[in-house]
Length: 131
Image 1 (cartoon, one colour):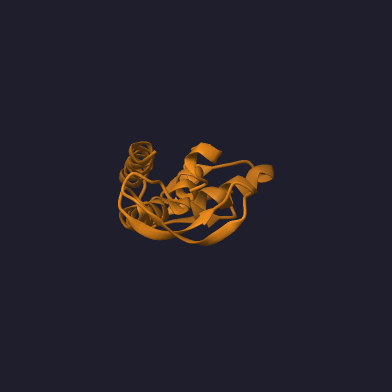
Image 2: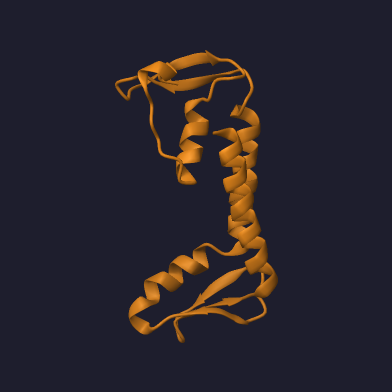
């Protein structure tokens, strides 16, 4: 899971950097033309009037924002991924339990939830110790 998550973060960073080089880092919504402009006022995306909600979504996910999120996710992975630590766990009933000692080979709830945000299916089986 850790390798998969590192690859998912890397792919997202790569996509953000490619988009950044084409338009710019900071995007903003332009409601007058139903589009998104970068900091140099270049149009990076355009939509028809009835699709203005997608333009808002695009503007809120500009390259700079995506790269900041990826950097924060890497910091979380550094703290929780592949190293022994204490962490909150979810038991087999889906309840949050107290802190548990996790070893280097264990994947904690924090990493599982982070991976879920990148598309990893959240599955906890009894054999996994509900970690």
